[in-house]
Structures are given as C-alpha cells and as structure tokens.
Length: 324
Image 1: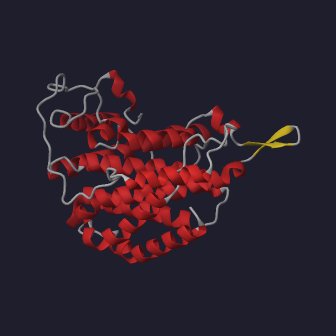
Image 2: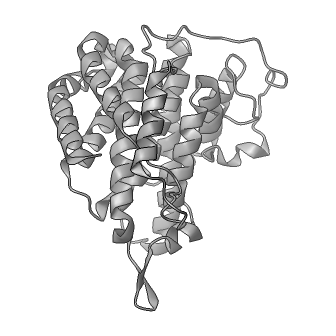
Image 3: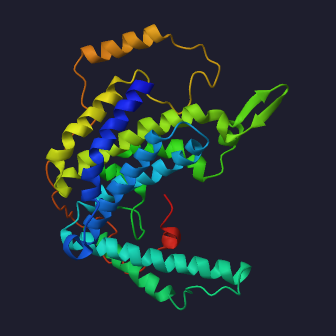
C-alpha cells in the first residue's frame, strides 16, 4: 500500500474505533457464550489491524503474520457454529471451552512435573474421564451437523468447506503455517547475500511481511464484518466504513503473493502491463469478492450421515482432535 493509501486506511479504522469498542462489550448472561465469542473475535481482528497500520514496517511484522491464521480460523469456526440451533451453539462453545481448559491443565501438569516441580500450579487430577465425556457430547452433534470424519469436532478445513471459505483458508494456511511449523524454505528465505555469505535475519523480508499483513489483515476484517455485523446489530453503522476498505483493496495494483517473481529472480512484469491488466479487469463486470449477510444463518440440521448414528465411543483418530 502507498503511504497515501495507508493514511486513508488509518483514518477509516480510527472512525470505526468507537463502534468497535461499543460492540466489543457484552454479557454472557444476556448474549450467551457464542455471541460473546463473536464480540471478542471482532475486537481481536480490529486490534490486530490497528496495530499493523499504526506501526512502521519492522521485525515485528514477521511475528504478526502468524496471527492472521488465528483470525482466519475464528471467522471459519464461528461461521460454522452459527449454522447450529441456538441451543447447540451455546452447548458447543461451552463444551469446547471446558475441554480446552482441562486439556491445558493436563499439559501444564506434565510440563511442571518435569521441569519445575517445586512451583505450585493448578494441576489436572483425574480429568481424563471428564475430557472423554466432553468429547462424547461434541460427537453427539455430529449426528445433526455436517462433518464426516470420525472425530469429536470437524477440522478447520472441513468447516471452511462447509462455509464456502476454503480458498481463503487454504491461502492463509499456506502463508502462515510456515510460521507455526518447521519450514526449511522459510528459514532459508531469511538469508540475504552479504559478501560471499548469507546473513540470516527476520528483518530481511520486513517490507514483504508488512505489505502482506496490511493487505490480508484488512481482507479478514472485511470478511468478518460482512459475515457477522448483522448478527451483532451493527451492519448499517459499519457498512460505509467497510465498503471504503473494500475499495482500497480493490484499487491495489498488486495483491501480495505467496511466492513472488522477484524472489525467484524471474523477469519482472512492468508496471504498465500491471496497470493495463488492472484496468481491463475493471472494464468487465466481475463477481464481488464479498457479499453482506443480511441476517443470522438459518439453523441447519441435516439427515444423519452414514456412520454417524450410534457413535458412542471415540475412534483412535480422535486422539488429537486439535489437528487440522
């Protein structure tokens, strides 16, 4: 993004701040757990974008890129759960929360027993049965909703398929997985030629990661608001600002790529050719990238899937339901 464009984006985000702050307040007693999660996810999404656009490019951009994966998964999972009945939404979120707390307690108990046994902690004692029962409660929902794998909860990939967000998930998964998993290409990519050696530093790709974060951070904020603003009761208030951000992204001559022409020393495409392609695209009617959801998704319960009925026990595949 140009400096002028970035300044304009900061102005739009600044105008949205009061509305976001107001919307990010709620009560689980009045809203329930699901809507509370939607409010929290909006705040998280907005604050990450505000941070990105209020800071000059720096080594922090390398770390911020990984956060976009969590923002993306928030959208996908909440959009999937939104298709449940209200009762099942609340049950699913509550069970997932309780199960997560117990599993984290298990992990910290094992860690501190080995490395810091003298430190008093909240220990997990005899929670295996409780966790198993929570998994079974989630599995019961599989009889009514669409996930096919024999596991307690669908993978993010499967939820992305169901919600029509698979291309976005695949792209951002590919972009960010190298930050949370071992990736030789991402490590070597940190090298810059210095005399006859490579000098490794996260700072070597600062401009790239800054541009990537600024663009796709906004892409995710726009996606979130088009999916959930009606549910939050703020669609009319937030729509003008979000559509200004849509225009900013649409006017970008070059969207950040995963692997660039310059990175592989391939002959570059001239700016004039890019401008011609950009103008040609605008000359024809192209489908909109985003569509505004006008209301909450209708609760969807589907016929029992083959193999879903009678799933009273967990399969071995459920051993690590957190895997994608």
